[in-house]
Length: 162
Figure 1: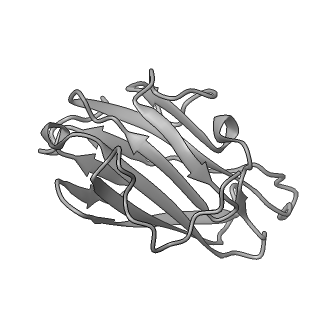
Figure 2: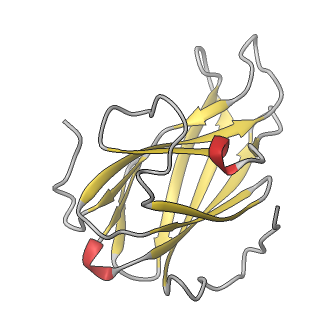
């Protein structure tokens, strides 16, 4: 497992990047954790609530998820990519199990508070995905704790799940 610093430039593979801050706070039943995100793009992307929107004509993007844990659960990304991020093309959110969106999402590195992936971003499509975290149980809810935003590779925001 590679520990990646926050000032690392996008990889040589993907010259464009999105830095996504995922914030976790204590919430109410049934999940007990509330997640939100804020994204900054180098070019060709925007955020719409819990959607990351990429201009697919812009090519590959490095997406760097950074966890800010303000909860009492001591959250951390699960230390195995297959279990940390579940991705599927379309479908209902959250995905039912592990996947990489048919190869659209490729892991680069991860640590307890950072996950870096490449979004190949080759076709206009919506990816439903779930970020999964280990942590301490809270009020009878055991980990993993899940956050399920979307990636829209379409650019104009018109591609949505039904």
